[in-house]
Image 1: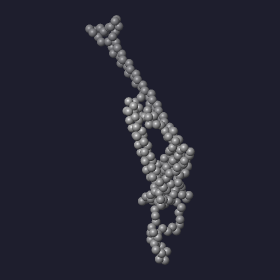
Image 2 (image 1 turned 90 degrees about the horizontal axis):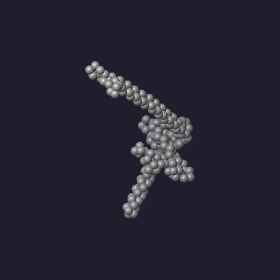
Image 3 (image 1 turned 90 degrees about the vertical axis):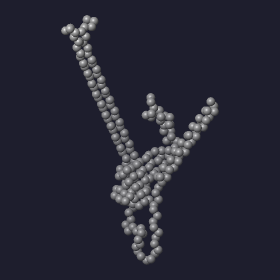
Length: 228
């Protein structure tokens, strides 16, 4: 029994270590995907020949501080406020009543124990159900991102993240989406409500986040797969 117990313990420990390693590798790949986008290297300046204008050379006669190139930074104002509610009520009822007279034999009603053998059937059923659901969330603040890609129609694909480490935990916020150049303000900012296909993630890592997360066994007992 002790040998089997040791084998089982070692197997569980190996599985736990493998799971932790897979989670850490997934987090490393995810962090790499969200790394800031570096600007594209400009073409090598041509050899000076006395000319004022050269083809393929970046010349901005009127500088625009708004993001428009790969690697430029853009500030997104988080002004998310969502609220949803749903309520439903259902009431049904049904009743049936059937009366059957006593059969007649030779012109006389059938009698049992001195009483006419009349019969009746009554049934009734009803259902009354109600349900309601309310959900609301709010997220405010600012997050500066970088332009990851400039699309063919001039729109900008942006993404970025912000880490905040406090004592035993880390707070992480990420956002990605598509921004129209016309929606960028003079201060090089845009509201999150103007970001198309926006994906906003606000989560945490570390001791505090783990303390507020259910274990795998507790998740099983609270899942839909629990038969009781």
